[in-house]
Each structure stands twice: as C-alpha cells, then as structure tokens.
Length: 88
Image 1 (cartoon, one colour):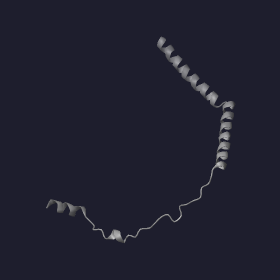
Image 2: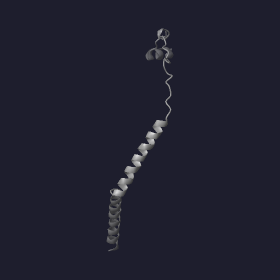
Image 3: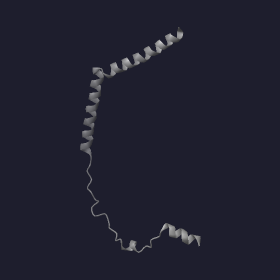
Image 4: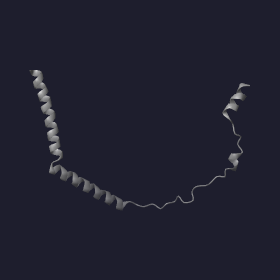
C-alpha cells in the first residue's frame, strides 16, 4: 500500500512540475518579457554597430608569387627504390 502511494506521489509531483512549467512558459507575462528583452538586445546591437570604427584595408598586393623553376631541379625519389638501396 505504501509503495503505491509513493508512486502516486511521484507521478503527481512530475505532473505538477510539467503543468506549472508550461503554464509559466506560455503565460502572457513571460511572452511580453521575452519580447522586450529581444528588442532591447537589438537596440543595443544597433548602437554598438554605429559606434564601431571601420579600418582601411592594407592587404592589397601583399602576396609575392614564387617561380617554380627552382623546385623542378629536385630529384624524385621513389619509395621502393629507397628500400632497395638501403638493403645493400
């Protein structure tokens, strides 16, 4: 008997938790407060955006291209040939 009462109490507690949580979440007061906070954040972002300083770009002509002629002079090694030479 006590075990069943305990289960009923647990179920009622869980039910009331969900009921009260959803009731608060969908209440008009909570919806108004969340909307006000969102609009307030948008206004703050717009104010910060207007105060930002724009920097001039100084990255033009910064890349130097390298000729590939010096790279072509390297000797090509093959893995199996290296193993053959190491065995001797």
